[in-house]
Length: 460
Ligand SMILES: Nc1ncnc2c1ncn2[C@@H]1O[C@H](COP(=O)(O)OP(=O)(O)OP(=O)(O)O)[C@@H](O)[C@H]1O
Image (spheres, protein in one colour):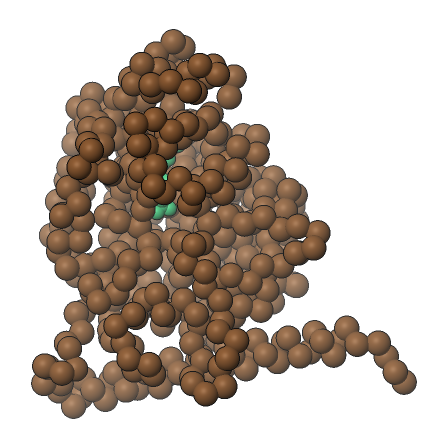
């Protein structure tokens, strides 16, 4: 990036930046608001323990290669004092999910239209370069103080090539995942369009479809149920309902591209950015008045209610997602003066605290290093997507799912007295999931065979 010199990108970042506040925390490290001393330009600094540098290489590579008003700009990265420092464009209002959480409201239709339009521009840019974001959701769309929306978090993004025009790795965040990603039949850039449709519902209703059910159950329902719709379609315009329906076409071959959706009337009639400015400035005021502190308290109290975009599971589940909920950005940066990571605490917070409540978040991002593919030998045991093993490492093979709901803590089978009604309800759910899994496997195998037949030369 032009404003960071070669020397600045090689030296002590503490001399180059004034870190003024912590913006949030992801699964790899912390994000801080900082001012570039020489130019007074604000930027966001992501600090990742150097041990995880390899994991970040792809994210950096994808960000570095992007030059678009609709993608968070990468300024530079370097390793200093056991941390990888990534400097990027500062988006003062945080993510769309942050804005909804802090304002305590969902978004209005014109606001959703503007964000969808910006997101589609970003997707069109990425897709035209063969890149798939793979984790589109309100938490990964950042807003500037002007209300411009930009794509962020390329941690699980993928690159298509001429030889590899489809991907099969199951990746993303369960509620937002496209059916073809879950079915492992191969997917392309159109998977992002499905996730945008889910994100549009998330912006309108505050949560994605199926948020009330266990994410793993949602994973089985997405490919087998009809596409989700808004809860109350008549409360929204025909254009908005139709836009969602177009994004949520289950067959990716019939789903429109980002370029096509930019011509949809819901998008072409989107108003200017000013429609978001009031919400953004209210959110900034609330943060200045201490909304962030209230927000954290609320999340601690409401242990049973998943925070926006956050599903908590019991500790028998391995975390494949992010750590504690991210703090939203603060305009009162001085008040929230940042603590840079100490040698004993790589992410700048007490690690003992991280999951001390006995809960773990799952509504995070499945990490690419946890390669999630179907085991090729499925002949002698019930099918389950490969990623299940990361979520139920303690369950014996073929054991029914341990949790009935996202927030309940399952009793250990060896010690608990299980009420027969509870056991029956669990059994029903288990069978339902197994049937859904068989359907998913059948669909996947059938589709692959049909494709094979279609590609055979006609011998008649
Ligand atoms: N460029 C930025 N400008 C302003 N705030 C940012 C920026 N990047 C990140 N943030 C804030 O920091 C939080 C953490 O971001 P980060 O990318 O580390 O993690 P994440 O996307 O929330 O999670 P994960 O790393 O697990 O995918 C975000 O939720 C957002 O509130």
